Length: 257
Figure 1 (cartoon, rainbow, N blue to C red):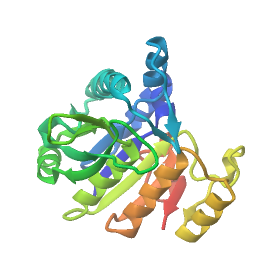
Figure 2 (spheres, helix red, strand yellow; figure 1 turned 30 degrees about the horizontal axis):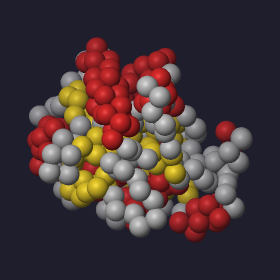
Figure 3 (tube, rainbow, N blue to C red; figure 1 turned 120 degrees about the horizontal axis):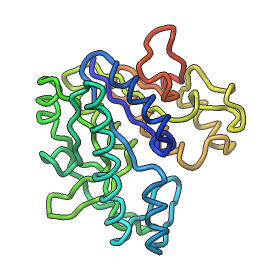
Figure 4 (cartoon, helix red, strand yellow; figure 1 turned 90 degrees about the horizontal axis):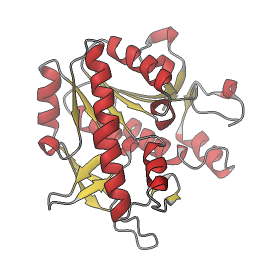
């Protein structure tokens, strides 16, 4: 089974939590791919540079100046820091953006009501390239910067990238897609960590969304999770980073049905 793991920004922002997660990820047996965002560092750097930031429904509006910042942070500092830490843990990681090896090609989002700027929606995954890397014992670490095939960089949602990579690999592999962040799973009470659900189906998700119990950044995460689960991905889960490498009864998190 191929493990496709996406790590959330709040873990990336905390050096100790990130190191603990990477210890667990490095110990995960079998072929694996790590997809990451950029955490708050891009927002902080943009603020230092007096570049206004806007987020709508959990998605960052990416104007030209913001694209420069996200590329520097996501594909540069964050990606290479993660790769260096994994190499120190005897995990042979290779850092990629969607541009490298034409890994992920996207199309610039065309929304009639919101101008998202240089935001990309995934169009294709170079499955053969990623398969070649994992077949040869390498661990791709993918940042959420993609390209349009016309020389333009695009900022792309990391949850979406994880989903599309998992779907592409599921054509020839069993795939476990796991979204890891700072909560134990999907919560029925956002203020109570113990309210996590062991399973979540589409009907309950729609109810929780209508009640605004699930909102903001969890919406794109869960839409991606259901897309993966409803298509070909073998198993889709949302869990705390502490359970990134757990299997079976020792795993704590929400399985998406």
